Amino acid sequence: KQQGRNTYRLYQAEMHVQHHQQLALETALRNTVESGVGLEMHYQPLVEHDGGGLHSAEALLRWTHPEFGVVPPSEFIPLAERSGLIVPLGDWVLARVCRQLADWRRAGLSPVPVAINLAAQQFMQPGLVEGVRTQLAAHDLPGHLLGFELTESTLMERGEQALETLEGLGAISGHVAIDDFGTGYSSLSYLHELPVSILKIDRSFIQGLGETRRSGAIVAGVGGMARELGLSVVAEGVETEAQRLALARFDIDLIQGYLTGHPVDAAGFERRWLRRKTP
Ligand code: C2E
Ligand code: CA
Ligand code: CA
Ligand code: CA
Figure (spheres, rainbow, N blue to C red):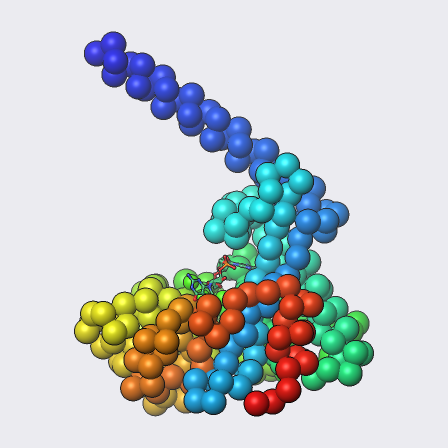
């Protein structure tokens, strides 16, 4: 019994430390969002499955804190969502990506469309579409250079506002993707009524390719249905040549993963992808 109580105390102490750390991290993130210092965008290529040509990029946020070091998105994005900081953070991402696209164009490069991830709270903001238009105009950018990724659960928000926002985003760029497909509970028959054009099959289904027959069946099924609905299909998290080869059997348009390119900073992306001579 004594030991049980000690274990409990220890547990409590641990919880206390954890809670304290979370608060410290939240405060740090709040300060970071205000100053923008320590935030950086990385860009990962999406390439054509046949031929390997560059199609577009996904913008992924990175945070380095002077005290906590590199904090992974898996940690600070959920924290930002819980604290509401995801809205100003998302604004920062939108502005930063637009500025980057404008910089690349000014340098005489032809950037590919860059897709940003939109969190549910950001998506539900009434001013989102207007904000996107404002940023595009401020940087003199055509809308097709921007893309948007929304997870299944975000898209399941069926309110009128959500549909209006989605239509607004679709009208701006036509590059609206369903992210992490297969991890939620949405049905393709519902999603096909929405103005989305790209479906990204979650990494968890790609991982097992060539190993278990079931993962192949899911990719085949989703790929086939998406094709019928006129959607482009992206395989996420392709890490090995074996996975890439396995994907050739299915109707996959695009691949994204460490095999074809890690997320890299703007300078790296420019060097490796935008200035690269066509093979
Ligand atoms: P996501 O949108 O599904 O992004 C893809 C994640 O998979 C990225 O992780 C990317 O680095 C990683 N990835 C890409 N290829 C591979 C691969 O071959 N193997 C493996 N194991 N991983 C791969 P990251 O950058 O750590 O981001 C994690 C999540 O954080 C993202 O998942 C997204 O949900 C969220 N996130 C990142 N940046 C932003 C942002 O600017 N705004 C919002 N709202 N969320 C973001
Ligand atoms: Ca994404
Ligand atoms: Ca994803
Ligand atoms: Ca994912």
